[in-house]
Amino acid sequence: MGKSKWVTMKDVADLASVGTITVSRVLRTPEKVSEAKRNRVQKAIEQLGYVPDNTAGALSSNKSRVFGAIVSTVNDSVFAQTLDGLSSTLRAAGYELLLTSTNYDPTVEEDALRALLARRPDGIVLTSTSHSSGVKNLLKSVNIPIVEIWQLPSQPLDIAVGFSNFQAGYDMAHHLIGKGKKNIAFIGGNEPGNDRGRRRRDGYIAALADAKLPPIIWPSEDQDLPSGIELGAAVFEGCLKVNPAINAVMCVSDQVAVGVLCEARRRGVEVPAGLSVSGFGGFELAMSSGFDLTTIEIPGREIGVASAKALLDPEAARAKKVIDVGYTLIERGTT
Image (tube, rainbow, N blue to C red; front, side):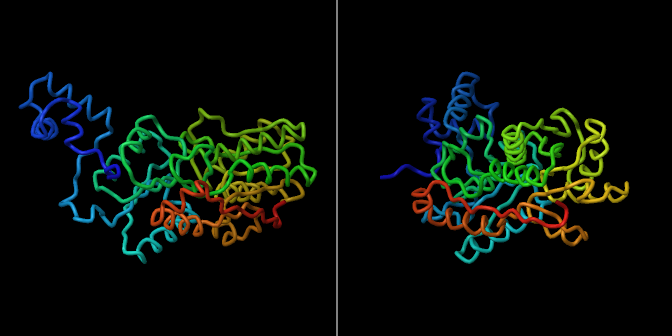
């Protein structure tokens, strides 16, 4: 027989050398259990990564027909495309999707994961690839497919579907350098849970190093600033104070780029002659805002569809381990 999908109450009881009734009491009425037994049970729960089953009843097939997803944000339109591709493909196969967001707060991920695992999903999708030891321990305790998306980690927990944010960042910086820009700033990616933004920034730094140019990064890690369009507008002045000679801005997302472009327009800065601006994502927002934005276009819906297929047929996906959907650098009028 294969490994059970889930750590059971009996597994906890066996490790703690108590009965399942004692484990149940520790979870429901701990005051009725001696301190010594409580401590043994709690230690076993932590060691095994046990999550109580909150489902109404177990199906004979041992399948919940539900998958879970923990995303960094639901505000980005490309993430919305990914979720649409994911949920529609799963629904066509007779599954539903449970969704929760961390809002780029890595401390939220473990609680969100526990809540999802309590529903006994048949698989989990994660947009973050940087996880706490607690999250990793929980994921190791279950025998279900885990799909990390929007990034290609060097060592996936199980299956990865995405693209190289590092290489995309490198390519965009190289594009700006090829336009003769030598004072190129990078804006964004400083949120603690935004590992994708950090990888884009790392690619930018590497490209500038290869060209023997100094990086100009704004804001710094310890600054608490708004995100999206507001961030682009707020830090534009800060960038110029750091280096008045800045003649190109590479933004972590299209939303940030739109903010920079709005502020540049307000100040009468000519784009791209006075300032080149690039984005990331291929969001409809950038085009609908009237800016002909140079950007990295991501196949967001394709990531969702490929992730759903990996959940539905994990053995085929595990044979590949990493599924690279690629990206496209689209040069437009802002560079």
